[in-house]
Structures are given as C-alpha cells and as structure tokens.
Amino acid sequence: MSLRLSTGPHLLHKESTRTLMLDVIIALVPTTAAGIYLFGSKAAWVLAVAVASAVLCEYLFQKLTRRPVRVLDLSAVVTGLILGLNLPAEAPLWLPAIGSAVAVILVKELFGGIGHNFMNPALLARGILLASWPARMSVYFMPIRVLGATSAVPAGPDAVSSATALIRPQGYEVYDLLMGNIPGTIGEVCKIAILIGFLYMLFVGTIKWHIPVIFVGTVALFTWLIGGDPLKAVLSGGLLFGAVFMATDYVTNPMLRIGQVIFAIGCGLLVAVIRMNGAFPEGVTYAILIMNILTPLIDRLTSRRVYGTVKQHA
Image 1: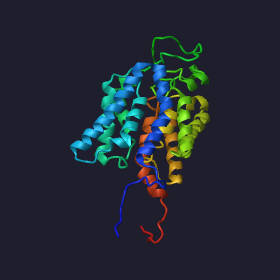
Image 2: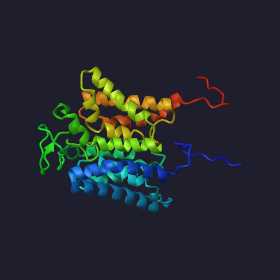
Image 3: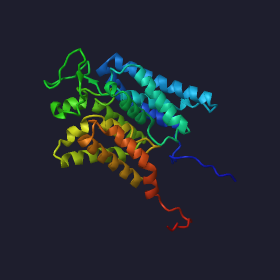
Image 4: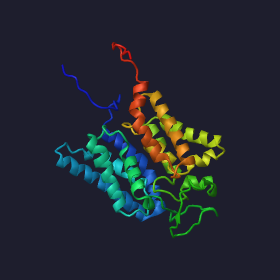
C-alpha cells in the first residue's frame, strides 16, 4: 500500500481545478463586461494583454523546465484576468505584461506551481507594480461612459484624470458607487457586477460566504466606530473586489472555518488601519498579502488534534 501526499487545499468534492477556475471566470464576466463598457477599448486591451501574458509565461516556463504543461486548467487565465482588472484602464500595455509574468513565474511557478504559492499571485504582482511604478498605478480615470451621472461626477465622452473615489467618497452618491460612475481600476468600480459574481460563486459552491462577508463587515464596523460612513467605505476602492475574488483564494487562506474567520477579521482590521494611517489611500492589496503570510501560523494555531497522535510537550 502506498501513501500519497499532496498540498492543500483538500476538497471534499469531485470538481477539478479546471471546473473551479471556469466558475471563477464566469463570475468575473459581469465585472469584466462592466469594466470594458465603462472604460472602453483601452480596458479591453489591458485585460487581453494580462491574460495572454499569464498564459504564455506559464506555458513557456513549464516547457523550459520540462514540467507538465497545465495551461488548460485555466488557472493562468484567472490570474491574468484578476491582475488586469486591478489595473487602471489607461495603464501602458507593458504594465500588465510584466505584472502577469511576475505573478505566474515569480509567485506561482518558482514555488512549485498551482497549490504551492503562499501568496495570491495576482495580488503580489499588483503590489510589486504599485511599489515599482506608483505614478502609473495610482492615476485613475473617470469612465468614458458615465451612466446616469449626478452633478458630483463630471460626465462626457472624455476621460479625465482623478483620484480614486476612496480618497473622497463623500463626493459620490451611493448610486454612483454601485454603478461604477467613479474613477478607479477596471474591475473595482462597478459594485453591482462584483455582487453578481459573488452570488454566482455562492450558488455553485465555489466559495463560502464567511471570508467576504466578515472581511467587509469588519471594515464597515471599524469605519463606523471612527465616525465614518460604513456604506461608502464598503463601496469605495477595491474592497468588494478583493474580498470576493482574492481573499477567497483556496490556496492562500486558512483551511478551517475558525481560521478563515480570523483571516477575514485580520484583513478587515488591516484595511481600516491602512486607510486611516497609511501612505496609500487603499489597503486591500497589502492587507490580504499580509494575512496570506500569516495563514500557515493561523492554520497551526487552529489545527485540530489528529486522533491517535501524542500531544507534544514544550
């Protein structure tokens, strides 16, 4: 009899990696469509380059290292798409190309491939891009198609440079924040589209509600405690996109439910602290990355004792 060991996550159903990734891609369709509609063809090019670069880099790396080529599992497509949705529509095309290469080669493949990376590849790539080219990554544009704009949001066919809505959310109505009538990255602006994707993944069982809801709820609670507007804090910046599509990554969050609760609360606390005191107005990227690093410790502290093992004494 042989014993087969494998890395987590260990799923208790028959879904393959390809099926799971396909469900994530389907969930991202509303957000992708909304981003392209709001920002135009430039957004489509950014997303296309990000996905193509991710797939190409994974294929070439696995070929050169004589590993099995696994691009058909669609994980590289998901990585590239999520990274692209985290970029401004006006980003030069070399930015998503470099970002996807970093995500796939540096964060994913060099650590052993899918299931072995200790941080979310798209998020770490975004963090590296943000630190390396802050001027390129921090300038946002109003959508070229503003739907039902109020007087607080300048409408018109021309994109205008602007700070993200997180800096001054009081300048936007809740309707604007929900529909995407605000400056921001391609995927973060339309909250309705994000929520549709969230509901789809809940319906098909791709994710559970605990991490996104507790993550967002923690940010709302601490925003309320410091006297801010919790609803606008939730609908501003990349909080919803990060909570739904990145904090829920199987590989980089804790295995057990209690660990996931701790993970989500930690993400929410870090976002609130970074937003209040950090140099960057948005803290979702770094909050999730920090909690990714702490995930092995959380797993160790919340692990259940295996029947038949001897308790170790200090």
